[in-house]
Amino acid sequence: MASPKFGQTKNETCTNSIDLELFLHYSLLPSVAIIVVLSCLEKRARRSLIDEKCRLLNRRCGVVIPLDSVGAFSNRWSLGFAFGATANKVMIMFSEGYRPGQLMPQWAQAIVLLIGATEVGLSSYPFFACLSTRFQIAGSCLGFLYTGTWFVVMIVDIVQCPHGQAVGDYEKIIFYWPSLLCHIFLLGRFVYTFMKVSWVRFRMDLNQEETSFLEVHQAQYVQQLMKKPPLEQPQKFWIQRKVYEWDPHFHFPSRMISMAVLAIICLYMFVVMEFYVYKIVSHELKTLESEIETLMASSNISRNISGIVASIQNLNEFVDITEGVWIITTSTACLTCVSYVFHILACYRKHMKRLWAGQKQFLPLVFSKCSSAQSVAAIARYSGWQIAYILWGYLIIHTVQCLFGVLFMYSFVLPIKNGLGIEMVKHLGTVILTISIVIGLMVLQILTAAIFFLQPKILQTDKEKPLALDNRKVFHNFNYFLFFYNVMLGLSACLFRLLSSVIVGAWLIARIDRTIMPKGYEAADMGFRTWIGMLFLDHYHTNPTLVCFCHILVAKTRERQQQRGTYYQHFRNVTDFRVSNKSRTRWLLLYTLLNNPSLSAFRKSK
Image (tube, rainbow, N blue to C red):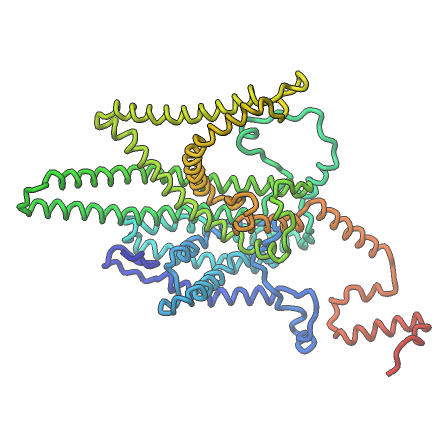
């Protein structure tokens, strides 16, 4: 069965006047209009040739920034909920339900997907641009109108056709309520921003304060470094010792907060879609069972009828067990991936603090130095990759847990249920005894080597004997006779190593902060390489000590310039005058030559 189209309903008689996929295309027009308006309000840092020709521009039409990917600590939760508002569009892209140009060849699907992602990004651009703009009155008004339009359209679509053919009753409510909640939060945020800025500007007649690149928590972190450590550490609670310790001097950037919010919402939607697939498979299996039973009832075949009945009963039993295990492991896999999201945030804080302190020993040797271009590319792709890793990790963890759950049911639960518990215990005891003997022989080798084949301790206070052989002839015979046994033991150890690698790799596939490759092959893990590149870029741009040092330099330079009166004081704020660069240069040259006539002799003649 094909996946349901975006906006498709369960009941054919349901008339829906709104197609969200079509509305996504039409929303590009107001989105581009909002971007143009915000661009006209922005000012460029320098005048260009177009300003000389068109005096009305006056450095207008600057570049609009949707969000600062590096070192942005303001509006973190607002930007996170803005990403949450786009979760339904992201999941459409993951499920490949949105593909403009279905008739294009296979080799062009990557380009088509890039075009679709660009369209989705452009449709969601006003959410972020209106939150990040310096012109908060215009941004809050435009953002409120655009977000309110999307909210009303989604509400109308849900009210007209709340059901669907995927989950069934109230499908759209189940699927879209996280995005609706994020839209409501954004509407409240825009209203709060508009009221706050309007009160400050029109009632109190105050201008906006100039923003500084030094955040308060960064200054507090540097001040803490300057203080002497306390003689006695404060007593910590159990949560601080075992789970998480809050640090008021460390703030996560908006990129990490947005990643966490969007990952959890996308994980919820992915579980809903997985439930849809599970429902289809379960329906098909039940249909197959009923058809087999109908065929058997209508048939007159009596030979091997008991074998067929037993096969059907075994199939029914397998389906029931798999369904139960699948439902139980859904919650455990979800909890595992959600815990991974918060654990990644904790690892980000731990790794950043180590880099700030100059500690790079936790990094593999191949990542001791990271390419600048790779770090810039890593900061751009980290959030998207992390969300994709979380979703794929959930699917793999869920599948592995389900396999182990079914194996546990057939190995322990069903034998006890069918009255075969004694035989199961006998087999289990045999397996445990075999493994115990193997482990005991391995331990016996170590104890024998420690007692008979090592020389005595040099000092009585030594913990272990020195690595010096004793009784060499006996040791060589010991090594020779155990050679053939260790060959057979190595076969089982090799299989155990392979099984352990598969389990650990599947369990940590969603952890982009930890490599699953062995030592020396860490560079082959593209996810871990992206994590390291992001850490280095954040380290170089958000190091509190470096940022505080630069802030002090800038502040001292401004104070020195204000205290020092020069003849060029009137030409400092040259951006306030509507004059060309050529005229400004001639005025400065004339002023210099009038005050320094001796420089005229060094000028080149035409």
